[in-house]
Every structure is written in C-alpha cells, then in structure tokens.
Length: 267
Length: 276
Image (cartoon, rainbow over all chains, first blue to last red; front, side, top):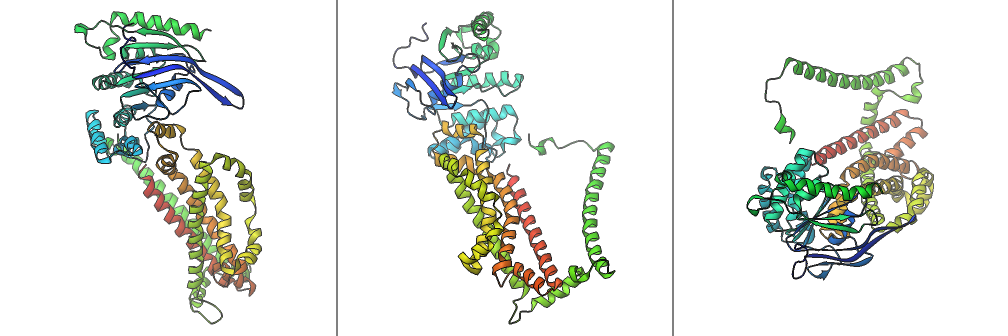
C-alpha cells in the first residue's frame, strides 16, 4: 500500500533477518526471514501470539542483540550496536529506586556522556510537560504506576532519539491508566514526529494507535501480513487512540486481526 | 504518592486513638521485657555464686567486674592497661572488617565480570568458606608472626562469606535494569558502576552485619594463640592463672564492642535506606 512504498531510504529496515538462540538443550529459531521497512515518522504496530519473537525484534533493531542472519539498517546504515537514534521503552519502567525522578530521567544522557546541564534542562522540561514537575526530586516508590511509566517515557525521549521502540509499554498498568496513558503517549510521539514501532499482544491497542499493523506468525516468527489502518476522522485529522476505538472501521480491523491471530493459537 | 501527602487531615477518631494507645503499650511491653531479661541475667549471675549454688571461682560476679576493670586500668611492666588491650582488639577488628569488605567487593566484581572465572572458582570458594578457619590459627602464627596472624585470622574468617554474599547480590540485580542500561549503549564498566553496585547497597549492609561479628571472632581467636596484647590474650591469660574476674571483665568489654558495632551498622542502614 501507499504507506509502505515511501520514496527514499526507510528509517528502519530489516533484510531477511533471522535469529537463533543456542543453549545446552539445543537451538531455538526465534525469528526467521523477517523483512520489513518503516518510513520516517511512521507509527507501526507489531502483533503476534506470545513467544513469537516480537520483543526479540525490538532488541535486534535497538542493536543490543545481533542477528544470526540478515541485516538491520537504520537510515540505510547497518546497525552494529546500540544507536543513539533509538529510544527503547521496555515492558516495565525499571526506574532505579536509588535515583530521584530527575536522576532517572537523565540516565541515558549520563551513560552516553552527553553534556549534563543540557540533559537536566531537557529532562526537567519533559517532566514538566508530562505533569511530573513537582516530583523531580521524589523517589520512584513515591509515584503511581502511570506516573512511573511517564517518567520512563521522559527517560526514553531525553536522549532525543528519532526512532522509539515500545515493548508492550502499558502491559503492567491497570486498564483505565492504560487507556489514558495510551492517548497521552501517542499524542506526544505524534507531535514530536517520532518513528514508532510498538510491539503488543493487544489488538485494540495496535489498531487504535498505529497507522499500520504487522502480524507475526508463531515461532519461528515471520511477518505474516501487513495491514494499513484507515479510520474515518472528521477533517482528516489523526484520531486519539481512545476516539479511534469508536470509529465504525475499528471493529472490522479488530475482527480481521483477531481471526488472523486465532488461527495460530489453535494451530 | 508520598506518605506525607496522604496524612490524615481530619481529627483522629476515638478508635484511632485507642489503636495508637495499644501500639504504644505494646512497644513499651517489648522494651520492658528486654530490660527484664537483662536484669534477671545480672541478678542471677550475682546471686547464684553468692548463695554458693554455683562455684564463684568459675563465674565471678557482676559486682566484681568494675573493681577488676579499675585494677586492670593500671599498666605494669608485665601487663599493659586494659584500655590498650581493648584498643588493640578494636583496631584489629576494624582493619580486618574493612579489608574483608573491600577485598570481598573487588573479588565479587571480578567474578561478576568474568563469569568463567566464577564457574572455575565456585567449588573452591564454597569449600574455603566451609573450612573451620580456627584450625589455621597455629599455621598463621608460624607463617605470619604474632601481629599479622591476627589480621590473617580475621580476614580468613570473614572474607569468603563476604565474597559469596556480595556476588550473589550482584547476581540478584534485575537483568531488565541491565538491559535498560544496554539500550543506552552502556559499557560493562558503566553497568557495574551505575546499575550493579548501587543496586547492591542492601547486600552490602547485610554483608556488614555478618562481617562485624565474624571479624571480631577472628581477632579474638587469633589473639588466643599469638598475642601478648588484646582482649583475646587477656581472656587466655586470666583463664590460665584462674582469675575469672579478668576473663569476665574482658568478655563484658567484648559484649559492649559487639553492641556498639551493631548500633553503628543499624544507624548506617537507616541512613542509607531512607534513600530507597
């Protein structure tokens, strides 16, 4: 479709990527022949049955795991280690309990050896914007789950990445917080025109947040299908995820993807 | 939300006041019971020998401790002051204790850094830790001489357990926290400095607690054999000339040293844990 056929170099590209894990029990093929490309500024969701290698896919793109076959490219250049262009948000916040909120937020800058005065300024700005301004000197245990996950987002964006990888970032939250924060984070990422790859097992989350949904097969994971999402929005604006759930198309996308996943669950 | 933010704003209900009162009474009871046990121990120790139920030659009396202490304060050409003995023991304990923590941390970090090294050394560490270290007192005396053998003993008794404790603390760090650091491109040294070491503070406190006691044991046992100084030596000397007053006075000072170390570590623990 039009979304995939973007002229120029894709922001993120995987070419026939495969990954095998080795252990005493033998070899496990986690991913096999995965090819995909994501354009700059695009918001893509990847769904698939649990254990299909969705998270592994993100680890490969982030450069903390090297593929056993194929290549991963960011801006047309081969990834050989963690890149500063990438921000990776994990399933839980994993805030360090011995650091204050501000100290947690500047962790990336600190590790990357960036100028700290500037990093602290940016972190304070981000935290203020996410309504956490009064908590900069608090410790993580003093914050609720939703607030902690917003700190994790600030920590991810503080290093100013072009590409944001989200690994089920809402799975540890209760359902209300999940919906509210989903809206909030989507808004932030769209406004900053980040390229986003969201991994989730929640079909509703994928359809409501992303412009395109990739479905992965059972292990060894392959990209099974590719569905651009078009929802009717007044004036052609992009809908907030919560509003997107009320469009007439939402349910048909949901059911289609549901059926595609179910086939593999019953396999 | 912080606890301060949810402090009750309304006037306390009668039920709440009753609960507070019960809690206070309970705390008071615990303190009173602790004091009672201590006093009962002292009274029995004084009364039983005086009533000739136990032989005072073997036990001495609490009331004899203070006069003995005053007497031992004087230094004679044959015998140093008890303060010198005490200082000698305390200094050796603090040095042994600090060395065990520092060396233990460095060794544990090396084992964490090179996993293969850990796999190779694991059985040796476990066996070394299980060895009855006091068996080495005469060996250390021959190898290291009178003074160094005391430090050697203190270190031998506390080092292996320190290494094992701190290493298992390092192992217990959430791998996802390490993964998070890796997503920012952290090097192994950065992971050690920014994730593993600060994340292991509770382990360090636990190791300090275990070590304080073990180092003191090592020093006193070392002094039994080799020294002409220290509370361990004084205990040995008092027993040989059958003066239980001297032995009991030295043991009492050891009890006070242990209590002070316990207090110091508790204070450190609450100071550090306030940050968590």
